[in-house]
Amino acid sequence: MEILTVITKEIFERYVPAAKMPERHSSVFNRLQQQLAASYSMMVRTLVSPQCETELDSNDRVKTLAVPLICIDAFVRTCRSLDLVLTATGFGIVSTESTAPASKSRIDALIEQLSLQELDLIDEMIQELMKLEGWGMTEQAQMRVATLFYRPQQLETMTTLRLTTDNWQLAQGRAVAASAILRNEISNEYMDELLLKLRTASMGNADIIIMQKCCAFMADFISMYDTNGGIPNELLLRQVVHQLESYRDSYPTYTSSTLYARRHAERFQNRKEDPTFFFM
Image: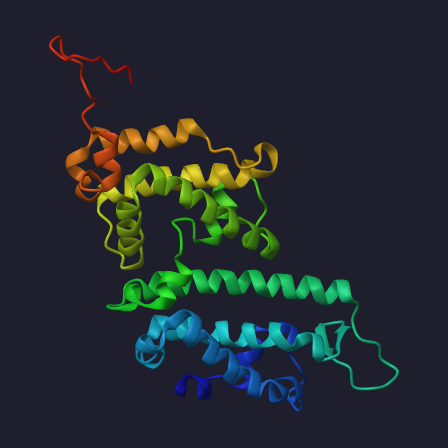
């Protein structure tokens, strides 16, 4: 937890300006010491992984992202209990009985803004962790990259939904459903391989093409779910399968899958000498 020693009052307020207090006051920062440690531990358990924890001190890029992530997470988790007041320069702490806390809508807007910043930081952190040997095999990697549609920017640029924390949670549920549909088209074996290659930053060009087509399908599924009740876009699905079938040599895991075997099973043919004809 050496990284926590880097987070001073000045550093904390740099990443959470709403908590900025006059130089002689450290009340917000001091009250968050326990939560800062808790946010660090949670980041290790749910994102970085215990196996890669040492990278938080030795890897400059990971460390640079971890510091603001810890600060923002700690503040978001506790700010409702801090009795924030809106001042001319931002938010502060209620210090007198005659000063009323900021309105719920103001606090909600602040939390939403910081939560979106946290999503971006987590996304950047994942991109760095993917480059580390071993992270892509961890439980944390599987949890954070559960489908091919795992980045907030995908929601922002590929769907009709506005990027909010609520929409992000909604989209993640729909992405799981869309991924299940795709598994029936590209095979469980190849989807598992794609996800592993994604988590370990080892995709080849052929994999990237399939991933892009799969993500286009998933984005459409997420966008249109309220309109069509989750009916998949068959045209986009056919484009995915067409890529696999047209360039089979580039997708050996797909061609060795049970799905491929079923898809290409030789159909029964009646012969003239057969005593009985079957119609299929």
